[in-house]
Amino acid sequence: MSKKNIKKVVLAYSGGLDTSAIIPWLKENYDCEVIAFAADVGQGDEELEGLREKAIKTGASECYIVDLKEEFVSDYIYPTITTGAVYEGQYLLGTSMARPIIAKAQVEIARKVGADALCHGCTGKGNDQVRFEGTFAALAPELTVIAPWREWDMVSREDLLAYLAERDIKTTASATKIYSRDANAWHISHEGGELEDPWCEPSKEVWTMTVSPEEAPNTPERVEVSFEHGRMVKVNGEALSPYQCLVKLNDLAGAHGVGRIDIVENRLVGMKSRGCYETPGGTVMLAAYKALESLVLDKAALKYREQIGLEFSHVMYDGRWFTPLNDALLAGAASFADKVTGDIVVKLYKGQATVTQRRSPNSLYSEDFATFGADDVYDQSHAEGFIRLYSLSSRISALNKKGIPFKNTGIE
Image (cartoon, helix red, strand yellow):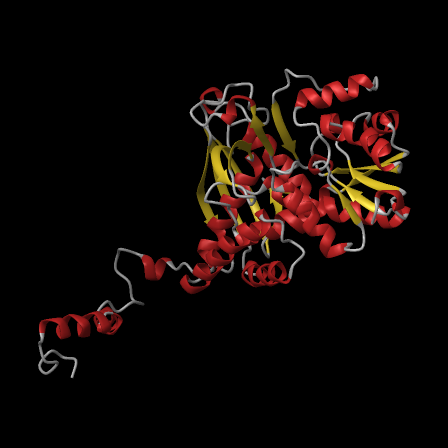
């Protein structure tokens, strides 16, 4: 669709520097109506305060703010937990998980207002452009996608500030705010500033959601969480909604410095990036979930679930939520999650979340079998035949190499 045919655009709007500049840029370059859309995914009330008024002052005709907090945790975070997905062994996928629900809601607003196009403020260097546009392609392929960072000639924060200043548009952003942050109920990410040098240790100013482990309480705190069919339903015996469970754990774990990571990751677009992430409640949730899995899944089932988690971490990171592969992996994880019911106690101390107690009505653990003491249920002599058959191929291979006939070896 040519620029002249685009009359109405829905912009994914945060009120930050990029999207503040995009509103006037769209009006000037596309001569279109701009409708701002903001998703409340638990980034905090302070991030949303005055957002509608700011969008309209900047030139938007309207600003929709949609509360997605419960849906985000229930329909995106909880299913992801059941897969056990951790990207490249460390990243708990906080930014990745939020993008499909935000982009889906943006499409719904576009349909509601009869928009011709969708717009986002993602840079041409990042993963988010793929995540947003992958969702747009799956849900609204007929709508035009506008990505200003791939079109305009501005290349820096200073350029954007100058652009807004020329138009007398006020912004709280400044050249001294050096970190790029993205927050939601699950986590907050930090990039930019000194973090662009992987040899530079993050300063205290980087972290915002957790206390420093060195400054955390000297006394550990224990928290009990309860699951039913793979979904957390209680924290310390109190029945809570999915979102409320996460908020409660964020507060408890954040106070003990739990959930900080500092990583260099492989972006989908081919480059490496360095980021610091804080995921306090999520770290506890995932540790507790995996501990409960260890009680209720047998060896083969757990191995397969681990394979699902590895594959799903890339599906989520790469923005492929609305795909058949995503549906298949989640269905597989859900079949295992149905058995994940029980209680876990996690000790929070100096940045660590350590599981100390676990129980489940579906537990496969039997003290009668596992005991080092005397028992009446396990005949240890049975292990000899099992080991002989289990290692049979190795025995045959070794005999072949040595030229020893099978006769008189117990194999013939």
